[in-house]
Length: 298
Ligand SMILES: C[S@@+](CC[C@H](N)C(=O)[O-])C[C@H]1O[C@@H](n2cnc3c(N)ncnc32)[C@H](O)[C@@H]1O
Image (cartoon, rainbow, N blue to C red; front, side):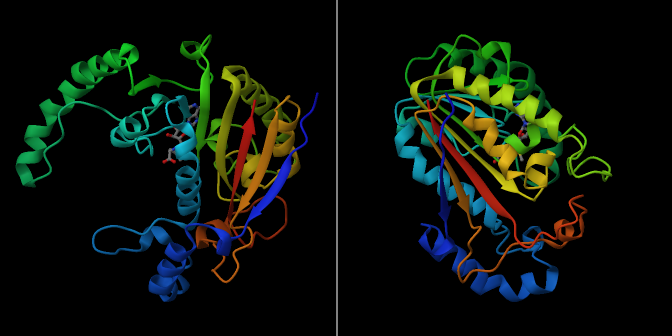
């Protein structure tokens, strides 16, 4: 039985982050005009303001966090900067599993000061990497109550089979799962806009089906990904119909596609210079990057 999706536009003026986005544009609009929307070049008191798509992902996470309270949560592609910090996991009593090839290390915090740091940090890094991080991770595997357990590797992974989760969350990750295929942003420019699309659909359909299997009845899949920014051709080229069909062929009890900042209202569109100049292979000019969220309930 196929699922019928609900498609919703999350227009910027209706978003909980609107005031923050408007304030960032008020402060940095002129500089962004000059540097071609390159948020990574902005500096403000030692930090850089998050890009518009990062703010969308943050707003989605904030909206959904409370509904994850007390649940078994799997994060696919957690990277080194997951929003599931120890403080958040403790406060929400989540039992968290994160999977990625690049995981944060745990153990003794690194020394941040001066030349001594390079000397002192060498043994600390080695201790964290080979002893403390694996020990803490093993402890968290069995620890009762809230915990953070990591699986090093790519999704799908044998260590996850047979388990079920109340929530599977993947932020800015799915577009990278198959960026080795032709047609992705990292591949050489292709001769045909369809190159790699059929293979991508096959691989992603299998991944999404695995997510469905790993969810407990009533469990939710929460995914967000940028459209036109980078990654596998489905996402980089904005092949929305194919992306939707990765999900609709499964029997979800509820399926929702949300288009974040596709309608920017009175905020600026987002199109960094390097992306604007990258060939998409479709011949169509991209005018605005936006964020797709998929919320599916088993
Ligand atoms: C752009 S980073 C995003 C990290 C984090 N979710 C965030 O929003 O900051 C994408 C992450 O996905 C991971 N990744 C790519 N393919 C993966 C796969 N098949 N399984 C697990 N992680 C994957 C990469 O290693 C990388 O850490």
